[in-house]
Length: 307
Image 1 (cartoon, rainbow, N blue to C red):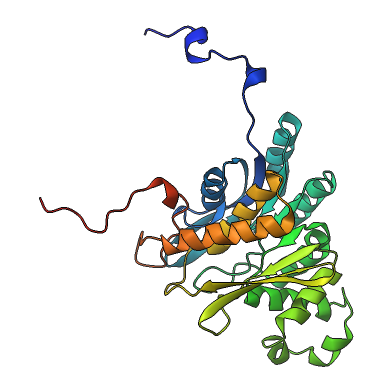
Image 2: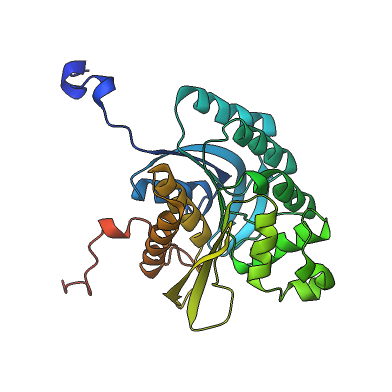
C-alpha cells in the first residue's frame, strides 16, 4: 500500500491549527439521530463547534416514540467524561437525558469540579409523543443536584411545571404565591412566571421556557434571569411537532455559549437557528418529522425536474 508522507497530508504543525469551541454533551443515544446524542452532535457541528460526547444510555426508539431506555453504568459514564476532560478544554457542558439517579449524581460531581464551565440543561422528562422516561427520584435528583449548577435551563412549559411542582412539593424552595396551589390540578395551570421563579430560587441562573405546548397562534418562549423576566420571543407556530426540537435548542445554545456569546444573545441566536431547523424539517419515518440541522448546507429545488 502506498502512503503519502506526513508532510503532504499534515503540512502544518499541530500548534498552528485553529481550535473550534468544544461542547461536552451528556445524553442517551437515539438511533434515529432525531434527538439525543446524535442530535446534539449535529447541532453543535452546524454551529461551528466540536462536540465531545458522553453516552449516558441506549434507547430503543423510532420517530414515533421510545420503546425502552437502558442506562449506562455511572462509573463508565464518569470514566468517559473525566478522561476527555484531562485531555482537552471543554468550553460548555450540555446535559440531556441521564437515565438514572446515579448518572445524575455523577454528572453533578463532574460539573462541580469545573465551576467556571457553563452548563445548559435540557430536562428531558418525556419523549416527543409523551412517553414518561424519568421517575420521581430522577426528577428530585435533577432539582437537588443539577439545577443549582445550571447556567441556562431549557424546559418546555410542561417540564417547567413539573420541575416547579417537584421543588415546591419537596420544600426545596419556598414561595408565598404558590403555597395554596400544591396539588396536581393546580400545578397543571401554574403560571409560567411562577414556575420560573421557583426554578431560579433553586440556584439556576437563567431559565428559557418554551411555549410550544401552550395555546395560541404564536409560540412564545420566555427567558427569565436573576432579576426576573428578561425577554419574550415570539415565533410563527409551525404545523408539526418535531422529534428532537428541545435537543436542538439546548445544543445550539451550548455551542454559542462555548463560542463566547453573552447569554441573552446566545439564547436569541439559538432559537432562531432552531426555528429554521424545524421549518426545514423532513419526514424520516412514520412518526414525528426530524429537524434539519444542516438546512443551510442544502439547496432544495421547488420541484424535481422532469426526466
